[in-house]
Length: 111
Image (cartoon, rainbow, N blue to C red; front, side, top):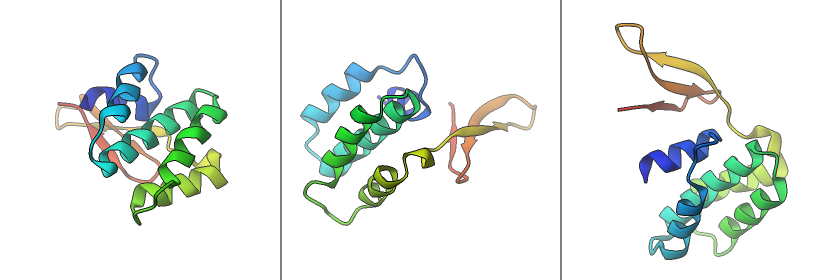
């Protein structure tokens, strides 16, 4: 699950989108569901499918809870060009690439 979410958030072609869409249907936790919806929205923005992205972003904003995810969804609805891009490799002490950093400083480390 974790790897599928990262792949979608990065917009990778190997992202298991069907799996994540199924996770949304059965997610009992609203925060978890909104996080996955945001990752899929970002995936579709990167994939050039803004209408699919808009559907997920609008779903996040239904029944608001005051979450960061909702704030991010509002931002992306207004400014879809602000979708995160992964641009800076993170390397370990041996110089091997172990993750990526986005333009906001968020880092994903691969295990």
